[in-house]
Image 1 (cartoon, rainbow, N blue to C red):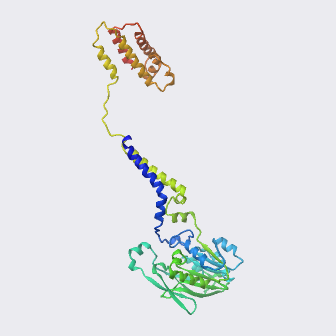
Image 2 (cartoon, one colour; image 1 turned 90 degrees about the horizontal axis):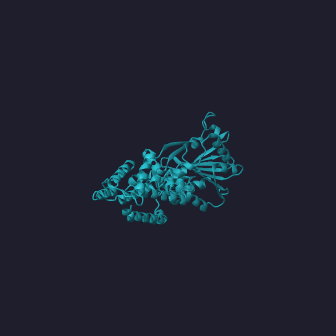
Image 3 (cartoon, rainbow, N blue to C red; image 1 turned 30 degrees about the vertical axis):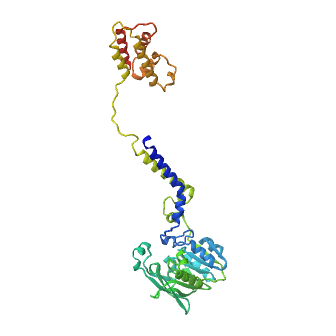
Length: 425
């Protein structure tokens, strides 16, 4: 580990610097926005994408003169059930006959509804039919084949006068047409009107072919307008001159300026928020503290893998040392002594070495902390090596007796004692 200290400290320093520079770098990165141009963002009031609705909401509040409210669908219809109002539904629609019948009844009493939607079920309940769909918009195809994209001329109609706007043909969506008569009570859409006379069908935005992408159905004192293109009523439409002109044209042809405007955007769910975030960890990444913790956790994991993945030391051949080499050396020295030599000093060295070894071996046994003689370890040696306790104690007691002061040890007693010690080691 010590060999890589400089490398480890360097990696840690780089990580710390990155942590402190991350917010600044993120801010710089955010200055160069990239848009996905995804249709699923339509009606999302918190989304800044081209087809989101954040800037559209700001535009509507700035340009609409009078009272303006933002509600969800259920609250809007309940709160204004006895009042006339202009209702703008963006990518939020009713998908059953009972709800559609209620809206038709409200329109008959004087309320005005504008639906920017791509739901053909609701359109058919108004006795309006979706025809062939135009090519869908894909920003990747657009960038790969820019020359194949065309801006189509659309006609703004409402009465005798008409003007034109241009928009990309892949943003148009479905075409619409209408049937002006209800055939019988068995007709699919008859129950939605429940005796309410259905008024005329008026084209508001049409293609050169004559089919419409925005139209109004007059019902009693009010009306219901459908804009069947995802491009209108988005952030992109608020910034594009032609689409903004078309959006204002539809609103002017639908709404009564004397009535308040109630806007209903698509209600966000946990699933759609996760899709908009583009990450499985969108809940953590949405909050700065948890996002920082997540990034620190990832950095720590990478650092741990990097450090532990390297060898802690280089590979070396392990040479087995001869056990008790100091004792072997003493035995070698003993061979130079004569038979008349006193071996007690050598035996005392043997005893000190043995006592040191036993203290080291039984270091973690608290009962041995006060042992000063080798014979006191007899029971532990016998239990550890599965030997007879009395035999072990006799050998160690003999060693203590031979090493007592004033005792002379000849060569025979010395060798016998060493042989007995070898049996218990």
